[in-house]
Length: 372
Image (tube, rainbow, N blue to C red; front, side, top):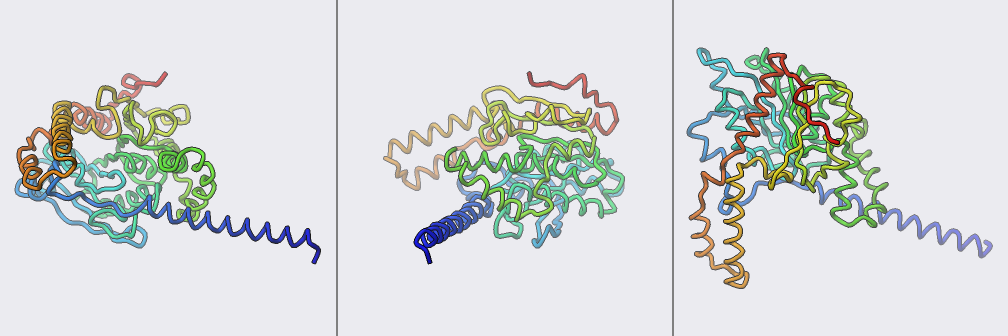
């Protein structure tokens, strides 16, 4: 064999080895990025849980259902509104949570709606908390899980005839729009901090994780992994869903969001591509207009900043090794009711949007806030 041919074969072999190595590395990185979500240690977690904080005053029913190959744990909150003789509920809100945790990270918000006369169906998505799955799979999975959840609510005879409103945040904010590519009988949807296109968000996440130059190298491999993972659903996106369903939509996004960047990645930034005339856009402003702090009241956020500053002062005082009894005393002194105050104004705005959609009186043109 001629020497140039041998050299060419060696070069090709090296390139194939490098290609294989990058493919393997991509798979490892993606599985790490989309690992299991879990709830934090309750001892040092300042937010309420259903049990014990609401279990004595609010009913819920456990509802298990299958999404793909996994059994997911769902919960119907406010079933008392469906009992004979009870005041009929305003409707049902189906909630999709953000990645890395579960629905109870939003329990205060969900209970606010229950207290206002809504039935809420929430669940832990694939690979999250109380549900099955080795990991959360990827950025499209939240829409597929929500599709499965909606089939569950549609089969419950008690819920038939109720207006169905969607609410989602981040991963779930994408889901409530992406799921509209499927045909469900929906009344309205509210997406908060959602991304429009999973591949765009995937690339943005790579940039945030490994930096722009390296992310550019991995981009085609990550896209390939994404396409292989989701197959026919790989292109499922929020814009097409919004345009397909044509229902009233409320799209909110914090102007300082760096997790799902406000510019370019967010659903709100895709207004020129959205043809559905019933979409309301609102930019969340103010000192807590990031990815999720705005779910809490301003007073709650200010107090959390103060509490965290006290924690840092203790870290400095004890050179990073705070004695257990000191740490426990600090946490025992927390003002938990204040920490758990919700952003009532935000939730009232969302509820009124739902009620207007149910009544058929949503004046989107009058309330729309378009970006310049």
